[in-house]
Image (cartoon, rainbow, N blue to C red; front, side):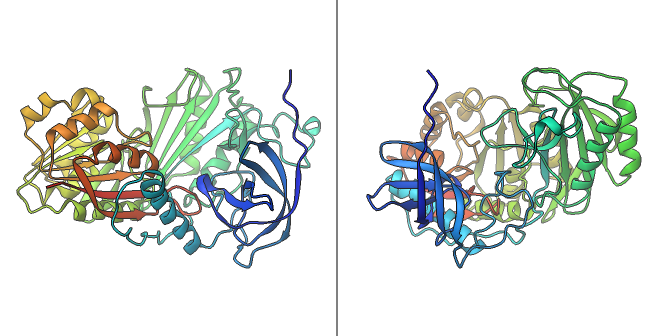
Amino acid sequence: MSRKKLDIFLPGVTVEKVAAEGKALAHLEDGTVVFVDFAVPGDVVDIRVLKKKKNYMEGRIERLVKPSPDRLQPLCEHFGVCGGCRWQPLPYPMQLEAKRQQVYDQLVRIGHLEVPEILPIIGSEKTEYYRNKLEFSFSSKRWILEGEDPERLSPALKCGLGFHVGKFFDKVLDINHCCLQKEPSNAIRLFLRKYAVEHNLPFYDIRENHGLMRTLFIRTTEEGQVMVIVCFAEDSPAVKPLMDALKKEFPQITSLWYIINSKLNDSISDQECILYSGDDAIYETMENLKFRIRPKSFFQTNTPQALRLYSVARDFAGLTGNEVVYDLYTGTGTIAQFVSSKAARVIGIEYVEDAIADARVNAAANGIGNCEFFAGDMKDVLTDAFVAEHGRPDVMIVDPPRAGMHPDVVKVILNASPRRIVYVSCNPASQARDIALMSGKYRITAVQPVDMFPHTQHVENVCRLELKG
């Protein structure tokens, strides 16, 4: 039996505050909570309910009856369809306060942890064109906009190159201009789309797993270097002419790569990256350190904010020059190298072997001799035996993925008993969960949120933990 379609319309609802997951919150007269996307506190809106639960509803704005005095004009032409920068109408100070509140809610209200006063969030100097990496997807069946008749669209106009629409893995919004990455990012994407259409190169169909043009990665540096990686679903005689055209049109591309990815997902971590022309890497500089970035390298996507984030981690570590430091989830060794001048030894662990190779190259190029790097799954590498062999850490810095740390990793950390832990997280919820597992032995002594992603609900947070007693 098909699910009954909701037919609930809520007129004249006043939005009260920003809520979790980038939504806004309002209350009905009977106390029912309503969550709505793309709203600003103070808006009066008509809401069409999309989901109804026992204690709350979720909906979308059917009509903006009266805009909030705080509401701003969105800067992007794709706002409201592309869900990537949903806080554009929200003044930046309000965004920062909402993120600081999110950290408080996860650590204190939900996590029930004892924390000192949370430090004021460190905002981003750039709120537009701040990303150094973007991934775009090709699709033979793009998202059809309101007012468009798909029956009247030619196959070429049904194709798209852009971002996946939220909750639809197979739908891609064709992007004209994105305000996240500086040029030549938009120009490269538009050129590739035009070239593929004019040369009848089929865009990928993710449901049917066929087509040639699959994904596009663009990386840029603060100094103007550009890396481009084009992913094709199969090897084809069309690859070389396209790459030649791209190279000719954009001579400023520093490092040009392609990948033949015929598997069922878009991940490139297990794929061969083929250098087509230019250098095999681009380089980013922070303070006096230079970092090599290759196609699979992890590097924080907001470079100026990454510098501030790493500076916080280094300050929280409180190093004197005599400590053994473990940097877990080290990536390309950025934090490890950042703290190396103030430590006796630094040991970095990361599961991506290519990232560890980059970390070793970066450390050597930066003249750093007190860092060692190890590759492998964290729960398999970081064991009691590993700690016994390489020395008990005085300080641990951890920067895990969004899911947080495996319980086995937490157990080894507790056994190692470093006197200080600096926990860097892109997800305060999993951070709170992990710290709760250590709360019998550690107390939080400082909390510093950092905004890496303006106009989104995401926030980076750094906690300093001290050994009790």
